[in-house]
Image (cartoon, rainbow, N blue to C red):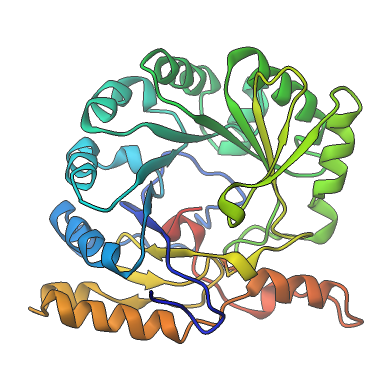
Length: 337
Ligand code: SF4
């Protein structure tokens, strides 16, 4: 099995299908400085499917489609269909802002998609518009309920919690998930990309999030799914919702990180906080065979040493402190979450 320098397999492949997004969330989108990827540089569905086929024998079991906003990519269900038929692939999921979900859910479901992650950071329509730059909460909720009626399972709500912005809504979000049968993941606010002016003081820790939830609901620890999932899961007493917290800042989990990413323009990226990617598109379009591409992927992965979040915590606990601007990272809009 392919392992990196810290003995981690490449099990989860996250594929960004576009860097375009119809929202302008402040923690993700560097809209003043970002240069959009040219259309001709975006991988075709056939190129993506070919890469997926090459990755599976190397150990990839799951694929998550991301963006930007993946549902902006026209006919995305065609890609889902191609990926669904790949032998050896155990799971395909999609992360979306939900704004186009109501229109696209049926076609995606018919193509073989079963699992969804939908970002909902607030249940207040005015705050939602402000946090996303332009989003309409009613459309997103309509998308969630449409997907549920079509049988998508699980549907996970992702909520990034930022102090002074939406930390007063943690219990409301749990209640919404519980009463409507959605899973919910709270995510510690992170310093993704270069544009979000992240400060430690804006981050609400896992411990604080759990304290707030426990003020109303007793929680039972379940642990990390498969031992390597980003979220630590908890059971609510009535078992009506699945609840997890992704504590990338205060309890980093790089030691078990099996995530490998491909950007919309075909760069292989080995960490959410990487400074650069490795160009696979040039190989795909330059006539390289599958074996050659596989060898390049292996050589990148075998040299992988990424443990950014662990290093961030070490720096936060040191005298010098952590300086997010010290390292220029790839933007999350081009990588997906
Ligand atoms: S910081 Fe990088 S290596 Fe660590 S968990 Fe996140 S993506 Fe994986």
